[in-house]
Image 1: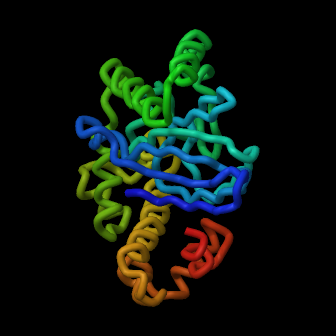
Image 2: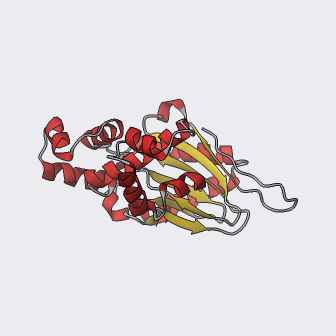
Length: 254
């Protein structure tokens, strides 16, 4: 998927954002790779259940933890960044952490993997000839760490698939997976940073955004129903709660 925005003022840094599919052998663990030129703009990001490892051209390398609400950032004009987006539940074992430790937070790569590993990765990224080459460095890092890490929690990944594909009550989900509601909540918190109810709300919002991209002519009531909301007022309440804005404004910004 490619999403690019640009201006045409000579001499002004051109802001853009591009997502690409991960390498074929990593499509089960990475949702996408991406590159961006921030252009000094404030960007608002909507939670998606994923964790991103990103490099900024000032040398910063961070893992963005799970978010429960939209968050914004501003960087100097012309700042470039690249990143990889781990699918839900994949990143915590890769970085040997409980996802709840990074809830609504970011952590430097050095704090997770050590200063020596951070210096080595920073040098490799700085020496790379292009954004595409930097993405290759990050995907190679993910591949190496995945080989040396415990596997993602299969139950948590099953939860993410079920809540993304279907509208399953949480008590029914626990019964389907053969665990107690308490165990389900504990394992979801470790894998996602929050319980299954929060994950369900976030994935439902992402279904709404996907539905809007597929059918730009559809009205909000139709999109609400297709995404799994009870009705348009339910959609409006949930969007305001997570993003602080209305569904129409969210779609316009997206």
